[in-house]
Amino acid sequence: MSHRPAKPDLPGTVAAAVGIAVVLSAALSLPPAHARQIAPRSAPVTTPTAYAIIGTLATGNSQAAHIAILNADDADLADDTIYVAAGNDVLVFRPGATTGSAGSGLGINQTIDALGVGDPGVYVAYGLSNTLARYSTSAFGVSTALSTVSLPENASSLAVGGAGTPAQADDSVYAVFYNNVTDIYSFSPALASSSSLGIPLSNPQPSEVTVGGGTTTSTTDDTVYVVGNGYGAGTLVQAPPNLATQSSFRPGYGLVGAAVFDDSLIIGPASVAMRALRTANWDDSVVLGAKGADVSVSRQGVIASYEIYTPTLSFVDVRTGALDDTVGTSVAMYSSRDVAFAGDGVAYATAFSNSVALVDKITAATLGASTALVGSSVRLSLTLQSGRLMDDSTVTALWLGDDTIPVTRVPGQNAVEFAAPSRIGTPGPQAVASSTPERARRAM
Image (cartoon, rainbow, N blue to C red):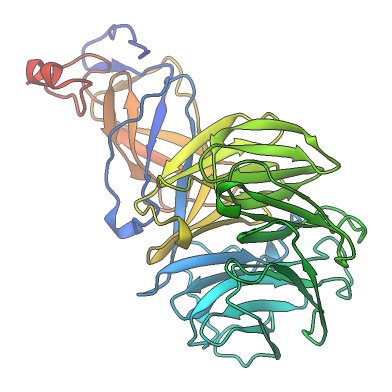
């Protein structure tokens, strides 16, 4: 419901709406140079909070697919290096990278199937040669692999354990394979030794492996989880770090992605809503408020998930299970999308485009019941959950009453300015947007 403010008391002034909502850039593949006003969403003006793209990383002519962020399990953003598999290379961006940041390629020149990162290195699975290679985490530019090992097939996913411990001895590397290999493989951090564990479920089709224990310093809870499609019947496997034993489950629907937060395992089915399972008791589960296949969870407890068949990135509070907001993307190719969080809660999302979108939660200040001279400049402050600085394409317009008002960003600040319009909340020649075509004709 729109709020209609009282008419101004004096000629030449305009009453500002008590509630104000922000119209935000919504296409993940949209670079800042093409900022544009989009149609307002249907949302009450009393809740001026939304997730939005605050910046983009350019990947040149290469399509960004997989993404991994180092040391994202703590609040120190200074060591959160960003790795993006784009085309036939891995681009490395400095911690905190945002619009205008330049990435350096590792010079791989191979088809990349999977990507993982941990303290011992950056792990890249090559498709054509069935090779797993380890690169230094300090490499920014063309680099040589520190070590390599042969894989039995194209890897569908990689994960690195031991994220919550300072020692690297327990940072095992895990790999799964979607097609003909039904084993979970484990490699030592230097890729010097390996072991495997067979999945007893028929046709598991494992699509993702993930490791728990990222928020603790203990090695005993670095549990390995594998999810898969299982010909539509699903695959869910749990194993200790040494792959000595396992438990498995067929949930009755195919699974694509998984993530762990505290003692909850978030699973992303292909066709139904996400679920959060108690890691110690899979019967203890809750349905989450959004669909999601490619799943990631921030250390702050926010789930980011891509729906498998529609280009929608959803944000869900893991503690309540409620949907907070969604961000639309322009590409629906689920096999080439990924999302990962930095330590400050900013989500880095790929959508098979020439850029990586940075998504954060934004809250607009309240103007309150105020007046301004028509045409005078009015400033609105915005708060980003991470405290970062947004770029010029983040906010494209504001709602005032029923009208959308174009804005310009205040350089170097999380704030925008707009000219006070001659009227708010009533149709007329100054209306920027109308709810129906008939109303638009009457306003002309």
